[in-house]
Image (cartoon, rainbow, N blue to C red):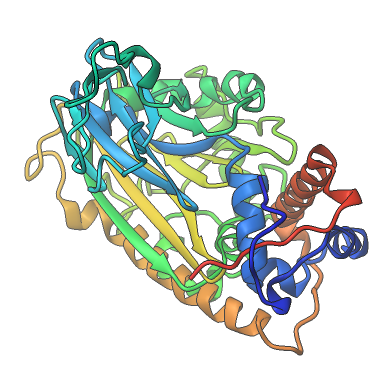
Amino acid sequence: MVSLNRSTTENEMVDAVQLQALLDERREGFSLARPFYIDPAFHDLDIDAVFSNEWLYACNVAEIRAPGDYLTMEIGETSIVVMRAQDGEVKAFFNTCRHRGSRICSESQGHVHRLVCPYHQWVYDLDGALLHARQMPAGFDREAYGLAPVNVEVICGMVYVCIADTPPDITRFRRSVAPYIAPHAPERTKVAHVETLIEDANWKLVIENNRECYHCSGNHPELLATLVEFALPDDPAGSAYFRGLMESQARHWDAQDLVHLPADGGNEFRCIRLPFHRGAVSFTPDGSPACLKLLGNLTDPDLGSVRMFRVPNNWNHFLADHIIHFRILPLSANRTALRTTWLVHEDAVEGVDYNIEKLTSVWRATNAQDARLAANNHLGVASKAYVPGPYAPSEFMLRNFTNWYAGKLAAYLEKTELGRRTFTLHAHG
């Protein structure tokens, strides 16, 4: 919840009337007003209203394969631990000792037999139960001091977490995307490579950059060697070449009972299968396979890419030969962490079936290019000359995203009754 009584300077204050006015003044089909992108106060609001009240992509189950494997994830000032429990289930806990609040896991990823707080050595089992609390008096009730759990959902091998007491319903998303993703068997993969890139831009600018390919032709030569930039099978801007490619590939996929038409995700998510350029089957410099061992039980390398996005922090590509997960988390008003994970078949052998350079080179280049674009965008938005500009027709996914975001803030105002009160947001760092 947003604190109403934090010490802050005048320029770090936002009141509900001002926020409601910004939402009311917002023009659909235009970028957001300047404060939404650059004001440190809105970073705190986004953590409370969006990231603390929504399902967030955390990792693939392949990243926590064995009992005791874990990774940590920072949601504003709140750290959580996602891990594989002794019974094989995926669990998540707040990374906060029940004694005096110390963080337990300080590394971003690792393996433990037990969770041991480094401060006073309280010991927790992999299911969060408190096993040992030294020097506590006789009669101390260990069962009352287990780690606080975090909501977890696993969808086709993808782990989602939500730190809200009552998370939103994720059923429609699960039901809609599973038919597209399941053939690629994300749960039967292994991690080939992981990179985290810190972008000097607000998280919404990072998302918006990803949600359009209007910028691709002028900035992503490596990506466009294989990727077709049109986002819909019936895109009115699509060329005759694209229409022919789409028709032939649709017949090819239909013959294999592969779902490909756009899912009805509204403003919340997007899922669609789209082709590569003719002769290309993967995100590699020459379009050849990045991994010779195909995913799951697939036998055809020419399946295009299932592009799946879900607000607020994840987009993905599911190919015949590998999977790429992208996860963003806001660090401040002007810094965002982008974590990219490349996965291949669980039995693929590095140096035999794939090599890291070929597997990752296209998206490593693309991520670096996007980071520069987003940082430059942030600098421009920070100018007093900035006013919201209109989206091009091809930027329809930005319209969806900003509508969703504005809706989250409006719902938060209503839920917390802040519309009748003034609140103060503290700027961190």
